Length: 189
Image 1 (cartoon, rainbow, N blue to C red):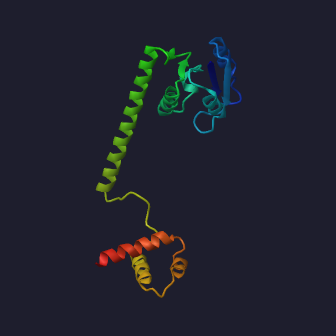
Image 2: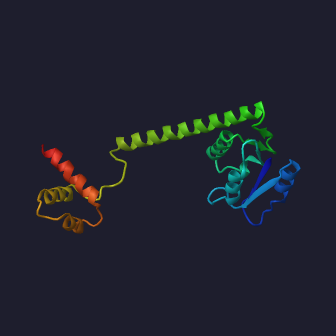
Image 3: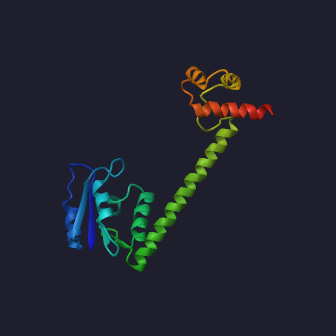
């Protein structure tokens, strides 16, 4: 079965052109969305993906109607492929049910992987540069060293209930308080 998907970003735009092209391509069922591809939920796409079965062919008018990004496109197409569903794009003449279309898909996958590697590399370089300037990453500590020392002493005094310590430090979880006590005990050995 051929399943179509059409999407426009705003209510002022019309789906007619895409729907006509999908019907001409032989789509027996067409799902639609009128929403921005970037930020919102695409219910029509979700319905189309859950409706399709092995052996079906998923058809879109243009590639940009389907994915929010190259990575998103690759993920959707990979999921289709794993389920035994073919994929066609009418305007770009991509058809993963043919050897040439499969090659294009692999090229897209390689580009997406390359993009992820570059992002990872830039992130690592940024973190190293920040560390060289004395910055540390991660979540800021809720307690300063003096407060941590106070918590450790209070935990060591078994006459003080944990609830009283929690009341003094309301923004700190019980788990964190115990972790501070454990660390202080290990450092004193």
